Image (cartoon, rainbow, N blue to C red; front, side):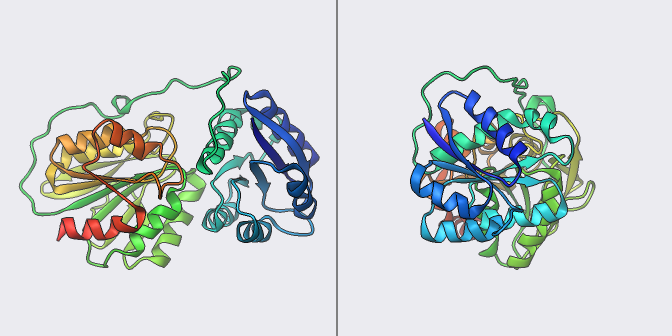
Length: 354
């Protein structure tokens, strides 16, 4: 059983989160707390495996509590965050401090809307436990409504495309859980004249612009949220908006960005599989594919398609991944030519492309 402590100043939110988690097999809410000071005592008494943590609370805000927690007693935390610009900045800061992931808190009609997030909440609590070397629950879940899982075929058909002659190089990076910090570490070590980079990170639409701004502040590259129809330039990195698939297209010998409002693929939009497939089709051996830490298997098949098209591919190794789901599946299906610790990814890319 995964023991969870729910921390939120709202009694309604505490009850709703508790009910959802207690209905899931293998999860038990062992306690709740209305503020971080109460939570601190209940962590000592109840020894939970995972915390869900609100940000705005009385007596001590969630970020201050999280910083203290990660310094004195590191443990898995899933943030419960609002989908606003301010909420995005604070949530990204929480991920920097060591939170495993976050669940978006509906801005209105929380009592009814939160049930739409039930599957995501349960999944991320389980992932947080696994990220700290906790065994997955072995019991079968009570059924939750799960959308049909679509492949990249739903957005982009698999086909072979004639490549124009070009010397331009391109890097495609995909990630999910733990990826915001992993991507930041990779980009921070790349030079300002590096080839263009396209990035798909599983993130809500309200967060992607803030994420790009944070990366831009810590990298020699120019990092921005991708725009439909813009040319991919050296020294630039482009983050897929949180509600669009990012596809690579060609205009003569130039690489271009196309944003696509198709269905979620592998239950994600943006999907790494969609981006990797488009890169395989339009850049082929001129590209390098990188799959970083993340839950699930999005990107594994696409990375294999890139490798089959002649691109060099690499995956983050298990020891340095928050969750070795996506990179692990890529390795399993033969998509990764190299398996690297996170700290070696940037130097490996520099070596391959120079």
